[in-house]
Image (cartoon, rainbow, N blue to C red; front, side):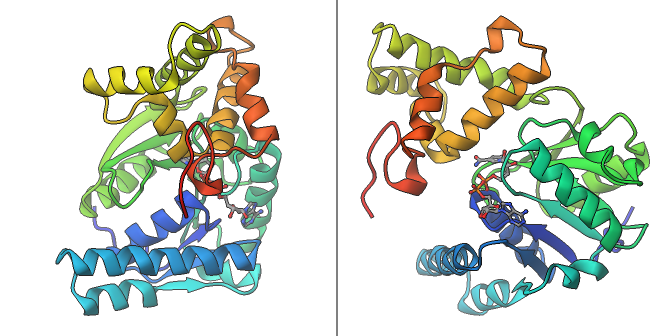
Length: 287
Ligand SMILES: NC(=O)c1ccc[n+]([C@@H]2O[C@H](COP(=O)([O-])OP(=O)(O)OC[C@H]3O[C@@H](n4cnc5c(N)ncnc54)[C@H](O)[C@@H]3O)[C@@H](O)[C@H]2O)c1
């Protein structure tokens, strides 16, 4: 099936993931509308994107013209109502069920009945987001990984009522953009984040029990073939985002003990040690 069904996608939230997804779509040639509730965040995200593109031009991976075209295709939206014409909206806001449900209900009122509503959630129930709309068959998860422009894997999550032909169509569309879509049924943490819970939380517990230092855990797991150790990866993901995923998988499994988060994860969020984005997390970052 062709990708022509989408001519104007939108992304909501211009944080780590939203801006990365916008870059993927703009690189594939789509004009992308981006809605972010905090204008300074959007400004900062655009400036960072431009810096990344300049670096790619300097490395000879992109021409100046391509970089300019990508930046131009990413169009900030001033008013939420301007999203009304979009045929596909990918939501990448904070990992909180109520916030996402409320956004999906608003989008459902705004966009055409044929439009598709997708979430980049790491772990929240797609079925429950679909339940806040009158189009559950047109709601699905399109879960990009961080950094979205570089990571080929995308989990395409089928909610309890998502139409299978839509899932197939989205997979074909993503594959056309050079991504590797993997279909997954809805369930706490889907596939990757369910398995990754142990990777992250077990590492935190080991260090809390003084069995090893963070640097050792990271070094050993990287030596064993993981691209990043759990602490370096949590800093990249965002301590808050990773903690939210831990909590949601724990709650989604009706408190299965093996998924219980560690209180030190919450303490890091409380003291705003959120990883690279705040300059401090498990490690410290300059600039
Ligand atoms: N960070 C990761 O590694 C990663 C990977 C895959 C998926 N995700 C998921 O992607 C989503 C976004 O994560 P992130 O890391 O980009 O978070 P982030 O905190 O960097 O960005 C979220 C952005 O959404 C904005 N926002 C919040 N509510 C909004 C609303 N109602 N309307 C418009 N904008 C709003 C915030 O101002 C913020 O800029 C989450 O669901 C997260 O679980 C994150």
